[in-house]
Image 1: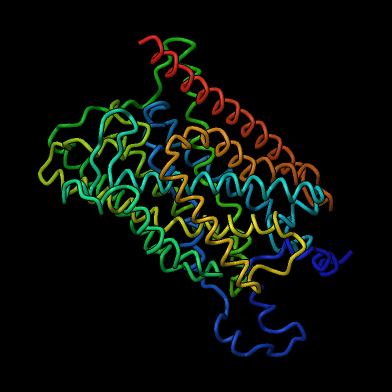
Image 2: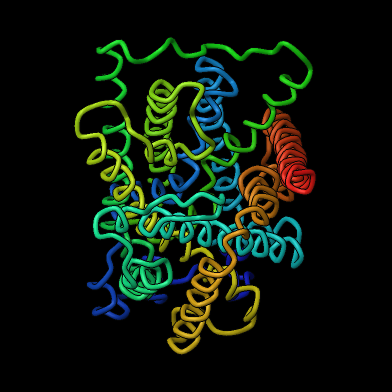
Length: 462
């Protein structure tokens, strides 16, 4: 069976959101629609790197310094590098099987290996993961700009600190303006490459956060205000050993980007560039992760919180502390605003495949595209405003869906090997991925459940 024959057998629901560059040039080998061709002549290498990097670096970056507190600097940094290599391997396996069958999407590869239910299962996981991630993003943006009282104590937002409490800097109004003024225009783009400039700004803002954090840490280090960080974990008892495993889910899911690899690949000028694009993106994100983890933990030490951003609420003990704290928080909030549309793109595409599997491509149906965009934004907006505790719920579903997308599904495709292209080492690696993913899932669910029930029992006893 030829690649072309297999590629032609995929249903419309597994097609990318927009036709690939080659299709825009015309199916008959001629010029096709010249206006469309000149409008989009393929995505650039740099634009693809920024888009993939933006998909990777989201809210999870703020949890990495806390993993250093649990694991110690040396094992923690080594684990970040290993997670990057493991992600690179899983993406390479995914793209290798895609090339064999000419699959234009992740769902098409799952459909080729496991049939209808395989494609549906992937789409459900992407929808669950991305809805949860975007609700969390919007909650964080509201917390940073408008403040939060979810922990019983009110933490002032940046706008509250600048202007005092006003009706226009409350959570509802700030998120409404953000949704209408930022999310809606960016969500209306049909091509991933259209977001390359905002993705570049998003990556730059992540770098700004890293530079400010590193600068503060270096200044305090020179002044002798920083203690020697813990290089290796302390394991005095069995409970401490168990605690080490709670850092695994954060690291395993730190590089999840697989659902956007195919859309980015489909829009490239040269499709062969996808491998160096993945390598470059992972190298860039690893650098950001390592620097953030190192300097974040160096700066706050054993006081490092699960979300290191919360550490910037306090006095940093250096001149211009409040200015630097606001700069960190505002840059991070804008970073999340610009990450949002990249995650939203994959959500809309996969939800459309679930609900309208036999309909024409989403790109050619403006009414369906508009209605789906509006409904999804409304659901996310309402959830972020009225169900802030949804963060706890998505610690279960989000972690489970993320590891399925990143490791379990690519490994399962490799072990299934419907076209006999996997090598012995590939299958060994696939088994390792599944064991790691299942272990991290069990640990994440158990630790989150224990934390929630422990809090409930402590409050009831009080």
